[in-house]
Length: 130
Image (cartoon, rainbow, N blue to C red):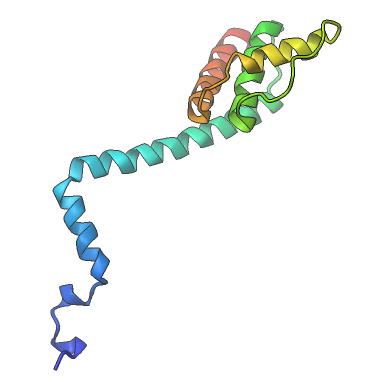
């Protein structure tokens, strides 16, 4: 007696679809912000990947100071590998020590924050050193 042809079209949908539709209607604004936030994160990651690619290809017209390069280095390492887990290099390894300090300065930051700051810093450097 319950043949699919006798059911209303709305009853043919999977059982969970009605639940999702009700939630979406009940809290439409929050659902919109949640979805758009996820899209913003995806585009931020894409922006970060493009910025990393640009850094590899870019030939600046002026020399970039080491402290500005180290800002980019620290943000990149924190975004890609998370908090630093190695000991600080010794006094004679000054380059490794500066890199360690730059990475450690970003300790505790989430990768999305690092992505955003990396892209912003690159934009500043492009304007300043091109």
